Length: 254
Image 1 (cartoon, one colour):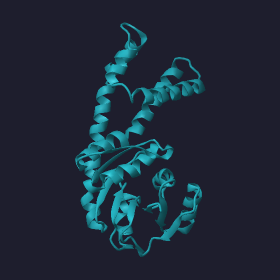
Image 2: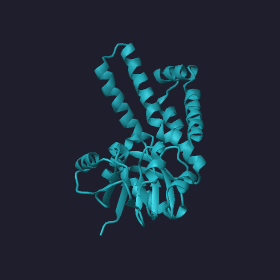
Image 3: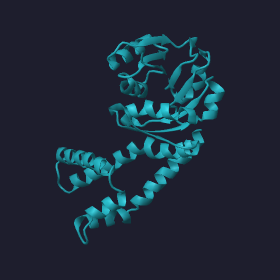
């Protein structure tokens, strides 16, 4: 009999994770609004157990806690019992805050990113080491998953993997604008940029960024000229500062 995973919350990220788990797990979803729960079930494409939030008993359940961080206390007060395992995807919510708010035998923080919606998330995890294997098994269902040794590291990882899609989107848009500025049609530039990122995503799995860059950049060539312009504009330092500022914000929120 498949193991049951109980989602507290029925938003987009919960749906993305459930899509990855539905083949091997029994899905149970808890929420405030019955219409939203019906919509969740329809989008998931399978029959699920649906429950009202108020007085729901979490005793001995494996929970994926997927509400908005600011709603943690409000939602926790409506639940009863003590969970077996709690996997939280609440950004900026520490293990200590989870322990104070919601009774469970064990706790793990998980930080997926928006690519979970296409089963290609880079999810970082930390918490009770006894849950490491189970956590990795759950979250590889939506892409890649990596266990970290501390909450300090997961805040940094959030700045990289969690916020990273926004930074790469900016770069993708800017490169496309550059091609349009030089005379390429917008539609053609978009197709080429998408192909570029698709191919790069495969290459970067196999090669160190520095080696990949060196392989593309011949002496005195077009890539070297463009690369020099990026360095002159401070793109490298801007990327480093983006991670620094996002990490500082993550720490402030927690």
